Length: 205
Image (cartoon, rainbow, N blue to C red):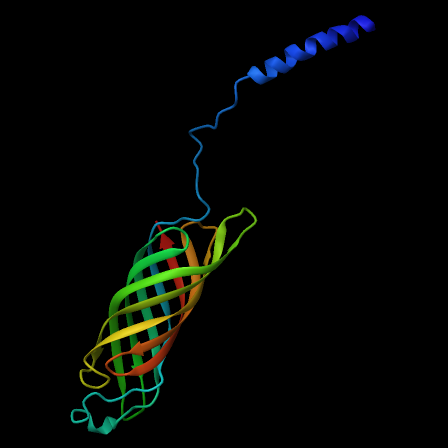
């Protein structure tokens, strides 16, 4: 029994040395590696509701029945963005957005089409169980040139600025994220204040 114990004591250092010198297993290079949340170039879509608190008449001679204002207006909003993420907290994009607004009966309806730039900054994020930043609270600002029709009613051309908070969730489908935003809107030439509420869908390449 003593001889067996002595033999085990003598073999223990040799076994430990053999374990340390054993080659480390390498990751299989053929195994695909994916990120749970994709970042980079993206295309986005938005659709919702936009309204204006007041709709002044740009050319009262051309539209005498419209009066000085058509009152409040509202209608469908649709848009698209094309941009890039600069890290997980900042993104820049160009956007195009169109809305069809209906005001008072005498004033009628008008369309507003805008094109410009958008900047978004994440204010807070929440991680999932795998430690991926997946849910974001953000603020964004955008501004661009806008064209209205019919000409002379709400205006002809304008500069429209907008911005506000939003929330975005990066789904388990990796490339897709969904969210919603609430914006304050201001048409500078018309001096008209409005708002927009719209859900968003984004695909990141």
